[in-house]
Length: 359
Image (cartoon, rainbow, N blue to C red):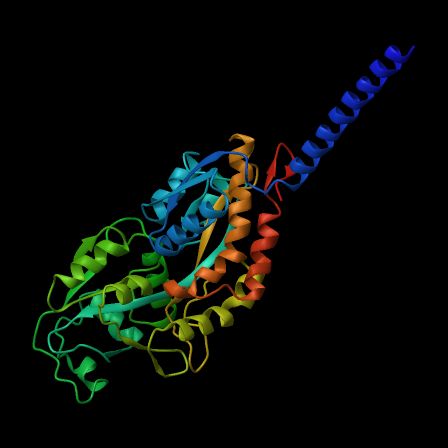
């Protein structure tokens, strides 16, 4: 009888141990950090946010080592093509979807993830800083109507500067580019002289072409008396001078983290009403006029990929518009205004897998 009781006691201990281990496992599962299921995510698109995107990926991977993310800086157009072909899990684009793209690719949602300024960078003999330009002058330079740096229109707004009697060499993007879209959208809205329209590609009548913001920066650096349009980080980081641009209120504004942030703050109510609305040439005394939001495009229904990848994308993008913003300003990208974070949250909450929300 004693032996039988001992056996029962041992059995009870084993059962209790199994239950305890099961409880511990359940607790671990429930408290496991989000995103810990291994996933390999491939994305790509705009070169405009590439520096901050690289930083985000690096910092997120430190928190979630099992999530491997690569982002290819191939331009907005190629990025969207990769998304539409479903070779990219998400795409970066500085230009919203067109009506035809929305019709052809239903279910793509747009998430504002950052913003920045497009600067007019130059390499002009004898001018190392402080060049003033207006929208009309910029338009006429890039259309080939103003061809000399000492043109009367430029010298009139740059008193005290000795501008060279040198041919202007324009530099533009030759790939399908959201930066080109932002630049031409600004000129369309700010200058009656601009005749080439708005788009990711433009039929430039003159100048040198290059791929990506880094390509344009390199050509400007190596071409005397050149001028081109660049995302702020690329000009600043490569020590390329950039112009003060006359804004809607009539002030010549130097691009800076502050003046670009003010522009995005002014634009927040605009995209709250329509995510695809132009935010170029916003009013405000201290607003830098060529400022833009940049976006991530992703399919609402992510069931075409494996669930771990879909969950990894959703959680990474949620982190980007929240904690990730703390890394933005060190790379000269303004933090998203709080109103825009709300827009991003509402978009991300639409992501689903097999009909169930991912967030």
